[in-house]
Amino acid sequence: MSPRPRKVSDDDIYAATYRAMTRVGPGELTLATIAAEAGVTAAALSHRFGSKRELLLALAAGAAASAGEFIRSLAERHRSPLGAVREYAECMAHLAPSPAVLARNLAYLQIDLADPDFRGHLARQARATRAALEELLTQAVAARELSRGTDVRALARTLEVALNGSLITWAFYQEGTAAKWLRENTDAVLAPHLVKRRRST
Image (cartoon, rainbow, N blue to C red; front, side, top):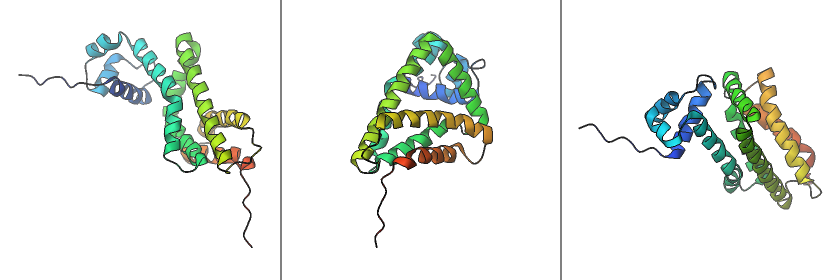
């Protein structure tokens, strides 16, 4: 008797899809590639999702739905709201463990921008991310990490721009790791808004 096939959840499939996407570009990504990564057959993926496009749309929808909750989960691990902001910056650096992986991620981003169905999910993910960052910055004001007069809406937008732009500029300069680059740029954006601590005499 052959062993019963392993049951694989949708989350397992999405994780395998993401891993495959870091290794191959859009033109090389196939259901067979994803299936091999997930330990299932391409036929099983086709039966479950219909096509590679539908699988990638489901992955994009899941990313959009979970973006805000993911950032809130970081906040639960930190006493400092700004500590959670900095960890989020390091999480974004996972998109660029190397310039080659970043280039592949940018190739998928082109699809997100050009295809209306993908772009809808991308826009929802971006709005949820910015809103969650604004929540963290609001908490940082309440915790007296940021100055009381900080415009958290404007700062969240600036931080969003800085983080996304940092991925690109890191690839330009390739000085240190992407994580270090993003941490430094995050700190530079936050620095003017930090509460000045009085020195004890």
